[in-house]
Length: 348
Image 1 (spheres, rainbow, N blue to C red):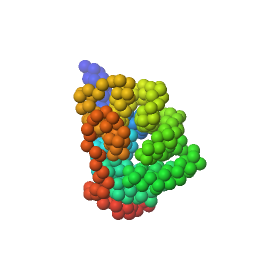
Image 2: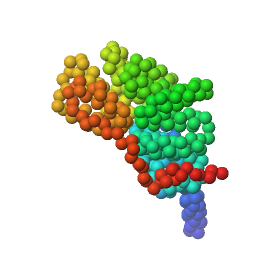
Image 3: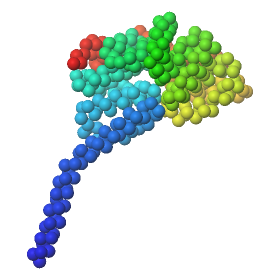
């Protein structure tokens, strides 16, 4: 009897020790899982940013994050929100991370947060404030790659302001440096954006040439968001030049990629372009299609793209649209933006 009780006691003590060990190691194990998921989300940023967002959203216990983990989570979320055009997520993350503007991890990635701010403001048509944010980001840029990306972003703002001479100058300066330093992704991005400028001013042949170079560059580095963007732009240029054979060859792979890519604005643009193509092929634009086109028009995030639809497609399809409203002079006034306008961080 005594021996049996002793054995039971040994088992109980062993179980107790294991439980204590498990209790002590579970937080570390859980933290390791979180770190792995955040890292995996970061790894997907180039090839599939939508998957990055899915992975980030699958982490439920963010209240247990350290400050650094929380800032990093939002940084990756911002970087994934831009190519997928999820501006609500971008805005939410900006609101959160600037509460940590004095944290060392925030300061270490200050340029990225300021760049994200500039992109958000440009897309929301706060163009003067977008420029301030991007110029501040350039002030704190830590390497040539960041300066190249920011130069491209500043050129995008100039394009939105219809200052095409400044935009071209910035793009061509950046492209020369990108070629010199072998930055394939930035070269493709600049080629696409140069194409958009030529498209804006009606130089469709030149626009097509830039879009072709951009698409080839994006395909070489397997950047899905870039392939989608350049392909749709090419389709639009083909359509307006009556290059319908080229259109037919490119449409199917572009549609497959675009419908699988969670960017509603890109999907809406493709829908407009393809419905015009279908009309040219003898298809009827029904009242149901017209309503879907009007809904798609509301989903377009770039005012220049809306202008292109309004100018090149709507009348020929007998669709009445509201002219795009230019809100370029509005001022952004969220509390967190005060620090951006001051642009006075002490990093060391």
